Length: 270
Length: 311
Image (cartoon, rainbow over all chains, first blue to last red; front, side, top):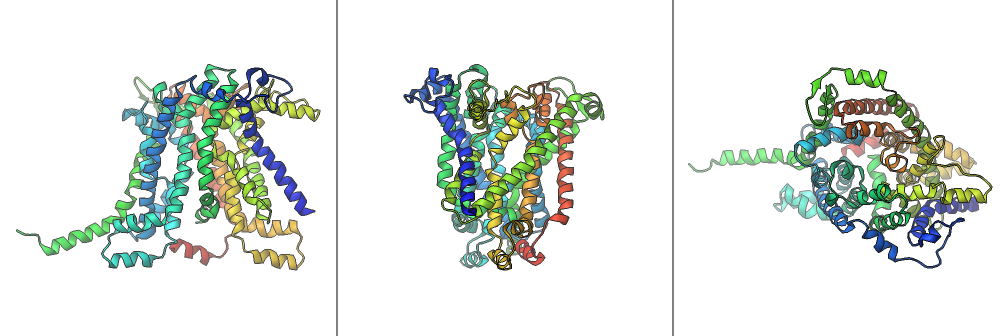
């Protein structure tokens, strides 16, 4: 009885959660007359696959895609490198002020992004970075508190004896980091890489504030342009939305083993 | 003169001492350049009349005075944000907890359910907004069609000031997969023996939830509580794209107020003052929640925590 109720609730809720995805997909492949039929057409008589190409060429999405890829690839690389370096520093050394600095690092997670929005804009403006992709890339090379925390928790599960043995063999700290810990923390790096990729790929406010020229736009910004330009072009909006959802979904599919493994839980618990 | 072996040894010792700082230097530099610097800078700006171009003048606390006493939009947007938070924060946690508790039972296909509930969290805010705008659409929306099947005449969700905020709450709750995941991992770390012992002594299911699950999970609940409050205050993308703050400012969030003052009216000093008020409110709320947490958060064994901290 309780079992049946559990399954009932789960199936009902998962239907609610997945329905918007399905509806968007159906909307993207409908023909125009079917789009505005009422009662709504739940499955189009013929799937209009060409809607995707049509939408793609309504704006320079090739350029947006290139910009998005530049931002995502370069910033993910920087995030992985810098966060793992910092995490290693906190996990494996005893130094003056370590715990105080670590608490400071954790507390920065509580600062809302909006509060930094204006001064950061001014700062990037002074640096001449407005209307370039730099504000979306460079900060990733300076480590993110949440990712540092996650990786540090991971490094701390590795026995110190491994480091000591390597030191006996003449390895210095950098070699221990690079040759031993970086390979060992690969699962955690996949997790960090996935989260960062999704954040960067999905980011809207950053590009909105820092980019002016269409030639600099990222995909999310391009998608949002449809709302202003073609108020009624629902098909194109749905089609680009579907395209935009695909990379994070694929990545999530491959990385979910790491995400679901409880890496988040163990890190939050601290 | 050749290298003095003494100073060479000393140099390597200095290097050894510096190494940890070199490792953490990326974060230190980033903190100075992208967090502390901007925070202090915006504090200074908040005491200025600071247009994007042109002369800036020191005006003391005038920005704060105007905001608090002469600008009704400040209070209105704050109120919208609080109303949103009053719906969003409890539902985010309660529904997240409900899903986590359900998935923590031994259900077949729990992996698939977990994935489905988490899926909306992996897509972009822009995609989320476009999806919901179409669902909510007054003329062609599927939501009102489904409500119509049940004999209910759906409102104009995004066009009616009495429904628009609720529509944003629902769209935001679609992304509660992250909260669910955190609570689920918390549930999985509760020792099974506690439940078995309670079962044997005949404690009913609801009492097990109330007296075992909730207390054992309370540190995680605290974490999600604070992050949900921050999320409520940061609500910008969805409102910006779904309703643009309207109708009749019914979804004009505080974050949007800051955004408009900065990037529409180009009053950087005023916007900086806005954002400092927001920062102080969030800080006060977080501290209040943390302080009160000693009354309702249960930490299992101080020793265990200490062990973790020392690693």
